[in-house]
Amino acid sequence: MKKILVVGCGKWGKILIKKLRLISKINSILNSKVNYRSINTKDVDWVFILTPDKLHYGMVKFFLKK
Image 1 (cartoon, rainbow, N blue to C red):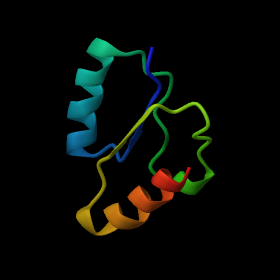
Image 2: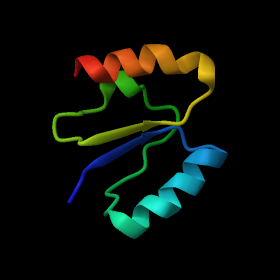
Image 3: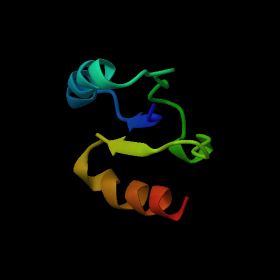
């Protein structure tokens, strides 16, 4: 089973989460006020970043370094 992190639960996040539930177990959905840097990514296989475009670069860079 893949462990998936979805960052951003707006319109696209809700659509993607419904689809992901068909192929993988989702353990939790974090509140949008949670700072993504505080998320334990040790066992995460996939990260989907579904935030406004201007936030993508910093988040992608952060998760690639993890």
